Image (tube, rainbow, N blue to C red; front, side):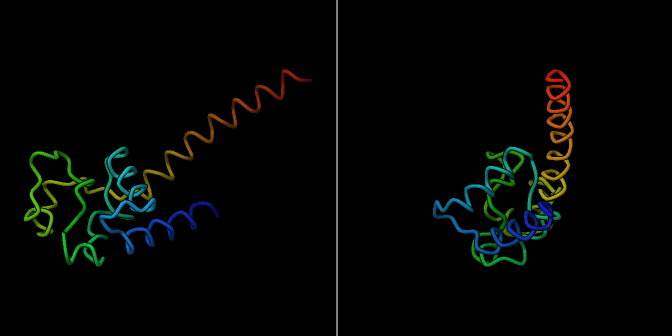
Amino acid sequence: QIKTSFESNLELALKNYNVTADPHSEAVDTIQRTLHCCGVQNYSDWERTEYFSQRGIPRSCCKNQNDCSEQDLKDPNKAQLKVFVNGCFFLVTSTMESKMSVVAGISFGIACFQV
């Protein structure tokens, strides 16, 4: 349930992504920078966005901010070498799942102590 809503929210955030500092776009940038990922399933998701037609793939996907020109970001073949190619959806959900098991383990441990 969480996964499906997260996926559709992420897709929506990509679709409405713009450079102005709206919270959804900032969240997308933060996720991409932190998890080293790009797009929902992969970086090519950006090619179907309004933003891509104007500016290319967002800079938050760049592996190296100093070696990532707008020309590279507008050309999917060049971008493939410059940006994180893995999508964020799988990374976020697998991170959530691995953390969830830790959280569940801790909660279970605490519950046992209270008996």
